[in-house]
Amino acid sequence: MVANVDVHKNQFVQMEVNGKQAVGNVSELIKVNRYYQRADSVQHCERNGTELSDRFPTKEWEYVIAKSNILGVYDDKLLKRPTLPASPGTKVFKAEDELLRRFLGFKDNGLTIGNVEHHDVPVSLDLTKTFQKHLAILAMSGAGKSYATGVLLEELLDRPKEAGRPAIVVIDVHGEYKSFADDANYRQRTKVFSDMKIAVPDMTLEDYASFMSDTSAPQKRELGRVVAKMKHDNAPFDLQDIISEVKKDASINELISQALTAWLHQLDNSGLFAKTGSFSIKDLAKQGQLSVVDLSDLVDQKRKQLIVSFIAKQLFNMRRSNAIPPFILFVEEAHNFAQEGDVGYSISRPIIETIAREGRKFGASLCLISQRPKKLSTTALSQCNTQMILRVTNPYDIKHISESSEGIDQAAEKSIPGLRVGEALLFGEAVNYPVFVKIRKRRSAEGGLGRDLASIARDYEKKVESLGKDAQSFM
Image (cartoon, rainbow, N blue to C red):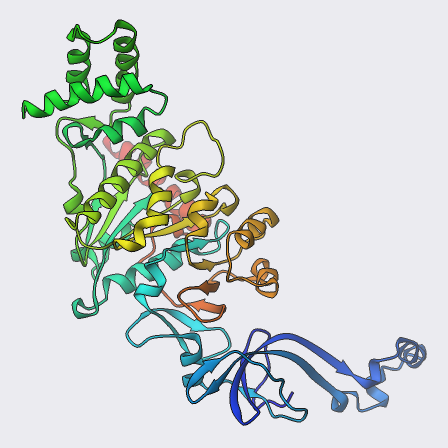
């Protein structure tokens, strides 16, 4: 291979094939030197205490052999699959920036998340291709998935009105995205929703059925009749009011009444339900606004699932009726909200899988973020037609990614464990060919969880010392 620059693995190259311009990718690199081909000769030379390089011009005979796969051939500006190999002696060069940009399908004024590895080419993604058929961001803890998500959120928030702006809703499990509300550049376009309360009058029978999955058909029928009557009265009510109505309704079978009462008490004990809610879906889903649903104060997983299930259903149903703008729902720790297999309860998984299957038809998009792909619903993950993979080392997670993704080949799969922090493998609908990306630097401040352990420990100790001094002064 002849090149005009140093050669790197995964670098894109160009060459002429049958009079047409072809694009390839370096899949393998080998360094060879004729002086070191026979180990016994090297050993014999060095037995006398002399290095081989001292006696022979070894550096002059060192060279690199690169294996490159031809990915596509341009014929009259149309990209076609390769059918012929390059002729022996064909010169191979680093792919020109504009050719590579066109080959990978990058767009002007797209979502610029970084640069192509080994190339000075911005990765500028088309909004529709990236999100309409959903996106998954997968990485082990500490590999930079939240950082990469922050970069995407910046690009969405900075998107001009004329380019088309979806509403952005983030399920923030650890409070990592609240920092957008403190950033001077984004605070006017960010709204944080915490201490979530669900308005009982806004709940549908479908909501009750999903929240109380073990209820029987007669129980659901009687509950639906009671709730419909209370809604008809047009007065605010909560779960305690429904419980009272169920108890005093003589037409309800006693066993059914007891079961419903027990279920409703269990829901009410979660503390999430009230006569009036603390938010509205129309406030959550606003174009040009980042809505952060802060669940960092909640420990109980079932409570989190109740909130996510309700919000996701309302978003999807209101989008289907065109009552809210197109939206992207980012779900952090998605494996906890759409878990694979029978896990006893999975309140939010059905609606996440529904949006994954049907959302593209209505402008309802998902971005699933997870550090445990193996635990993430295969149904939901397989519907994410674009995937951004940062470093993953668990072989079961890597296998799960491969089995649920059509766009990843064996060579790319083997590269995943070797990715460094801030590097990602991007493949699927958003790009024409899998590409390694160096994520750009964020313009906004990172959330508190992005800080290193030493600085967190140092700040905490300073805080304790300061409180001690204040206490002494008071005494």
